[in-house]
Length: 76
Length: 523
Image (tube, rainbow over all chains, first blue to last red; front, side, top):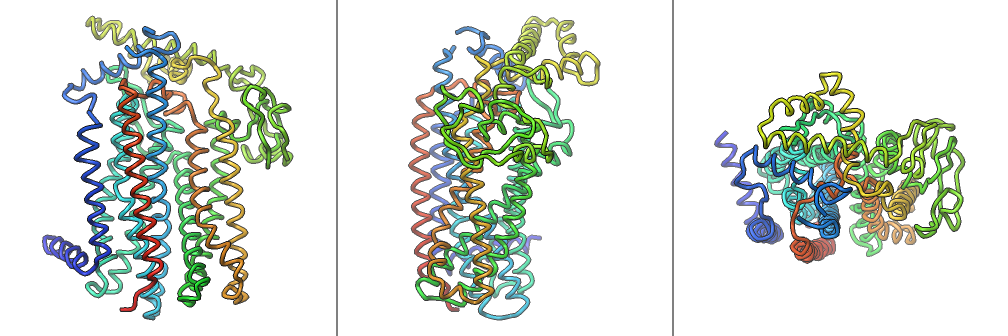
């Protein structure tokens, strides 16, 4: 199993060494993942339910679902 | 507390953002789904014949597959972020059911694709021919299995089955994985969607090959690629037609409003005709079948056949579904809204009892949500089944954007029919060995590529716009599914994503066209 994993890593390593096109694509994937995880995820995607227990999460969602300002439910 | 107008801004911008992200994501996905199999078929020829021509041809198309895969990889991650941030009520409400297929998809995609894709691209001359071929097939199958799990999740949203609502956790919990996975809507959606991806990939291969013929380069590679792609494309489009027929039947049963909107069918009727071509009047003037169109060409009885495989079947119209039709046992939307509000009120009472520690009331309400009790069975089928209607402001809210759904359906079907003709002509011309000389057909093949993408997008517009206002059919409209966040932040991220995805698309087109112009490489 470990040998197969090492062989797989080697295939990737030598593959990228041999191909300029795939090195460029790898760079592009790296930039994209950096933008998605380091910038968008941290700055623009705060987890609204983070730090809450399951019971608190349920209470928040039930409150959201039962106090919507539509169809006469909850406060306008 | 947000006002209704502020909330609707969040809904609109969140929907726009999700639609834009999904559209850009879907630009890359269908080509991956189909091209993987076409490449695997080509490599199988190489494996069986040992002819270096097939190896060279396989490597060329594999390079294009790799570019598309690399640019498209992980664009779907943003969609998953958006579930948690813009649609947190939805994500929590369905988390257990929606999360399971997505988690399987993530694990499967990572292990299967990341392992075998390396062998596929870089393993030539490093592993045996048989192992390499297996890796190529497994990469193609892995991509399609990933699509299966995503489409199972989407199918569940269109036809929620195999779950039970728990008022304590405010979640729908999965009670039957089998029902979710093998839901007829999910299965039909999977085969229809992937087969449309195969058609797109076949058109792409045919079109790029036509470019080589027009340039009088790589004629042998182009002709043989066209042969494989057009056979693959014809088989795929027939599967697409067959599953499309299944979709019609299931949409009629589970989402009758979507079918009515697809057809701008206002008054229910038996032996309903299908509008083959038509131009719709503005919304205010469309009140019945007679005054909905400036002009139309109808095919008698076809809508009834499409919806139930019965020439005389009754097809409910928009008016029946909004205002009710007691003769046909169709409840009005306002009646469903009343019942939905009863279900929401029960949930609110449960929350209040929970806060007050009133366990007696909590138990009494919990029994209403328990399908094992008679009281529960009645409440779930008579009230909770319309839970989402309780959030609507007027009965007309259940009508999706009719012109967009109507025209998108015709674009999808129209282009699909043209592709059947295209593949038939290409196969016939190839059989007559006159493809190399038929320049007009080569231009048609090349210019068919963008139309494959347009048809593919139109299909998603029908599926997703047509099911509005629901995120989960009948249970949760977009207005209840959206997070209580600021519309401005959604608007800002919308434009950031638009820039990011447009840059990626430009990068793909530039890299792809450059590699196509380089052509297959000699070893």
